[in-house]
Image (cartoon, rainbow, N blue to C red; front, side, top):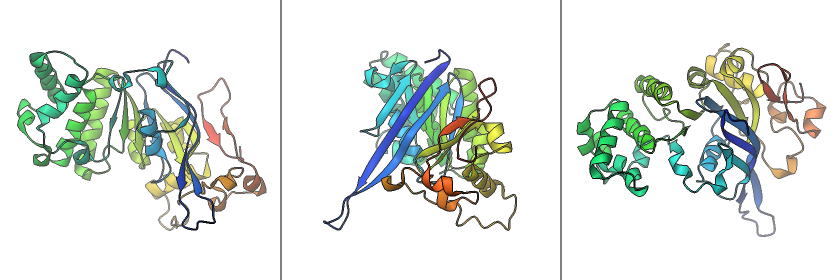
Length: 319
């Protein structure tokens, strides 16, 4: 693993088994993650974008160990995460809904201090100083220590969630749709806070979102997911200006609305992840460029820029 990488994911797969109501039929097997590979550089903001149900949240949860029975390998700073006893100090996660992730019965000061107590960091006075420093970092004054989550606005709650993630001084934060539950007027404040913290603390982010506009604003590189597979990886600029995969183009059009007469209702849908079609492209039935090869041959991901150029990976038989 190159020294400039903080995270490397190799061939990650996760199947979910769905019980069949017919006792004479086999259970249905859904590939939530299908041979996922990517890396994140130290201090990089890496975006993961795709429609709801594509597997991006499952991927984020798998990295921090919240999803079990995952095949493949995950390396953090060159070490297999299975062999890292205290990964939680290095990698933290921010969830979409801050209210559900904050203990409603505890005051904010207790919530922020708790990770320090669990990891036996500092004495009471030292922990209080750390809490005050984090509150200052996230733009809240010390009086918020005595408030409950229900007393805060959505934006303030998400600031506390971010602060809680920062308490153990992590190097990588998984941000799973961190602004999608917030009012539009507040979203930009939280995004700018995350960018500010990224600069001050040299944080790396895995930034998960369904919104390409937000991903373009935040990220250095972007991976596009469809039906459990990564179909394209490139710089945010290349994804935005020169999308290659047909699904990426449709996803981008749905955000930018290049042509308001385009009917996208039948374009962006749940991909076919049944194991019986694993040898074909999951986007085959929806792709306007599909050919016979796409029905029978699963495309492999390849770098279309060549070894000496900036990496632009695409999983498509057209390339």
